Figure 1 (cartoon, rainbow, N blue to C red):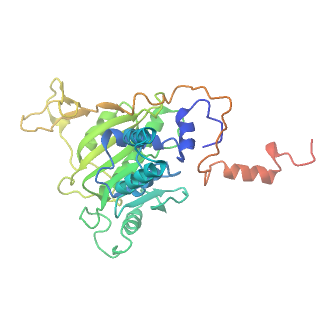
Figure 2: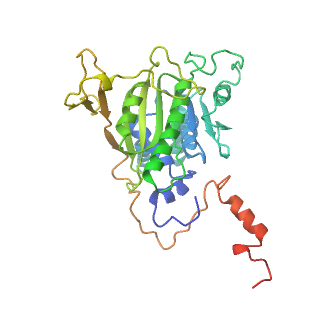
Figure 3: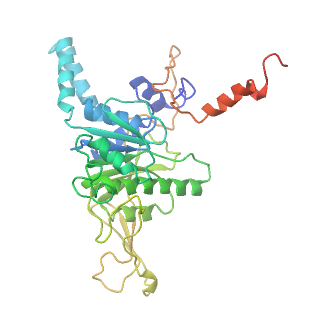
Length: 378
């Protein structure tokens, strides 16, 4: 984040600097948690494509430091302020009450691992790894970071299966996205490949009942993605936080209730995610499709037809329900807000550790400055 380039047009950008977040994307995870309670009963989390670390920062402040945000944090602040104004508490008592609330919100044995190819500045309680989420060697590094005292590198099942020893993670999150080109079909395809890489790693380490949250680019085949995720998760929803710009095609899949994969297939980074079985729709007689809305999660099911009524899943395709989350009274990420005249622009919370323009600046300096000019020349 820069100092003032976006201050006038992005309320969440300004708010992130005021509240000490590394990036505005922190509010996306906070609003997703407020809607879906992602952090309930969670002590082991893996953050993929983590740099610059705003989502890891949320995990650190919520799970390790016990801070509260969103509606629960607002209600707690309002209650303590009301007691202080009415004279029921002194300032010291109010501060002690807030500290005791933070201590009550802290969790024991929390392990957070952040993985990215780019370097990331350290955070309290977060183990950072520079690794490729598509490479098989990442799994042992991840497991060792989660359990440095009990990890056995020579264990035969540390890479592939979902036993209790090799599947210790409650939540896997990914806010990764490619450098967009403006060609929407290409951007959606590259993002989908990044999503599959994150999902494939998540399947290797998630414990039964675990959760998976990842960024997607909404396209014409989002229903196919939804149907495929339903193969390994009990509940799949697509949500768009209010802090995500309406002009952006990004959204987030929130998957809950991970269950073991079909028989005869186990996740592994050596053999990337692939279908466990194939359907024989091409050999079936075409029948007119029918559709209905499922009452439990609002998904639209399209039945493409099957030979037997006993084949409950044969020929079905799901259309993902779309949810919006975040307080309706919150800032509009696409709106422009006036700034007071005496406003001072804040410095970024965390300057870039490895900006893509760093090499270009070095080359320009070697060449003698802008446009290759050297000192003393006209």
